[in-house]
Length: 162
Length: 130
Picture 1 (cartoon, rainbow over the protein chains, first blue to last red):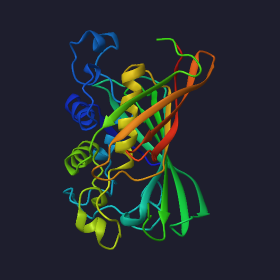
Picture 2 (spheres, each protein chain N blue to C red):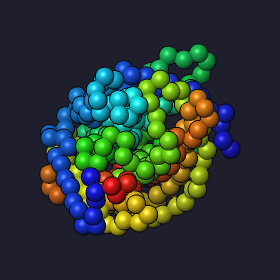
Picture 3 (tube, each protein chain N blue to C red):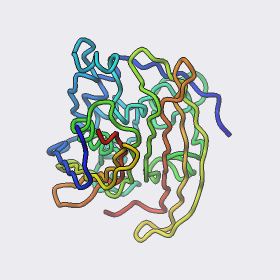
Picture 4 (cartoon, chains in turn orange, cyan):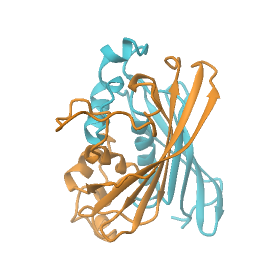
């Protein structure tokens, strides 16, 4: 079942910090006055930037020290780290994006996620593998679907030896 | 730029990954899974030899190779499988090859190798061919 979603404001500093963490100094991700940025209608986001929505996700559980009102969220059972095996056994297996519409600094995206398929496989080194898929949609303030993300997580029975 | 089937591109996207790189990615992305920054957790019950980088760090660095090559807002699709962990000390080279072009869109095989030539992510991107 899809959740009701949360708002994800696209902030210039966050885009700069994210680009910088990937050693990316392209002007389109940080400099509004650069001709290359102007040609794109303003600062745009790197291809994997929507991951930063984690900061705004009230149910995000891989931020155990975040101050919260009430009790900390638990695994939802979907997505890369879901499936009930605990943080230490959850690994990200695949990530896929489709880009439908540009996202610019100043946009406010609404983020909704729903669980996808689940399946099991016998691993060569890690014992039984439980895969689970999560589909996340990012819509802008005009309701336009901008990005669809499909994330596949895997739970292993023991640490992956590689 | 006009892409043709068989076109290739590659770039060293990071040299000598260290814990500061990984911590900066954690802070920026919001993924504070302690396996990526806390050696006590990574080497304890989890059983890893040390912390390792987020898969999304490798995917993001690989994306940088693509946007540096094709343009900041060039991608229509981008997806990868995470095939191997990236450890402190690794140096990563991202590679791309245009495998087909249809309806004005190029399908590009994408992968990133560590300094041993082992693939750490592999997948596909779609971008306008011209």
